[in-house]
Length: 407
Image (tube, rainbow, N blue to C red; front, side):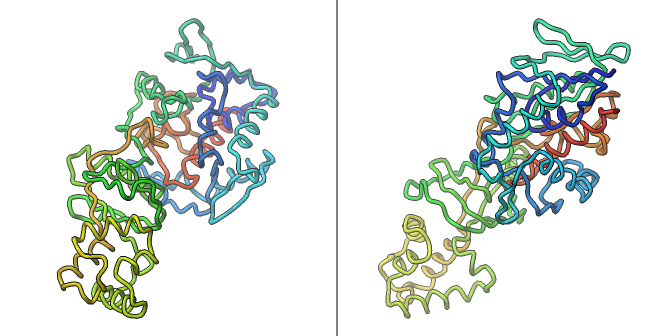
């Protein structure tokens, strides 16, 4: 009979516990918190966007990008959907995003924890693993006052994001002692701090196009809702650029985001914007401020007008050529110098981690240490917003669980 220890009762740890248990083995789940699934309750603003039907690998990122397709592929993605169907979760699907029909993250959390218990897995809460050693083909898992000897270990401790949930980077330290390479870990999916902020737009949300420039070269564009804050800019489209920004800043590169406040006109040529504004103001016989307020939030209009240094009560045709050009520039290419990002405390996940080169991506077993498996956020693969990081957790947990289950 194999004795299997799973360290971490988050998304991937819970799944691997369920899959790994059979009638001929003993599975012990160790969780440092008083209860499992604490971080799950925070996902999707408490609604748990647990999957995305758009599984293009461009939504995933790693320092070893060529290896992503060995992990994210049609066969593996089907395993995730099958698992949740067997768990009895009914999805509510909107714009490719899967939520539990209840729209409550606690539905997913409770279903997983209940299934772990029903499977016969032993759960030990408030158990902080401080070290793992391997001697004579056995693992010794140590806390401050207890040792557990086992045959196989799955490490699912999470990364360094939201450390108050228990993800404080302890897993990286343990794996480094076991001779694993940890690619530099950065916070990911978080807000960005700008050189200049504007009180007028704090709290505003708006559909925009964001273009990230690194040392004056276009890096990536994102469409979606941006949130304007007292420190800078946030929102899903911002989050999806934040990973590039944090690494760029760490390498002393200049990071600039340009905002297009009228992305629905993104297809027209630059000179056509003048004609569009001329026609709008002439047709409506309204000032430029009033015209723009019928398109975008008036607080954003105030900022744009001030930054353009124009009289918003004038018609567009009454502005000088230079004023017209400046207004259009701020409407479609509003410049924000990024000076910092939010920290691990606010980051939804992390980039970097255990190199994919050191993992058998069919089983999640370490290539460095036999019978050691690594899942979830510890791996050097991160997804965009929209259920992708939970997909990594589910899938890695399923693969690891299947591999250790020798029934």
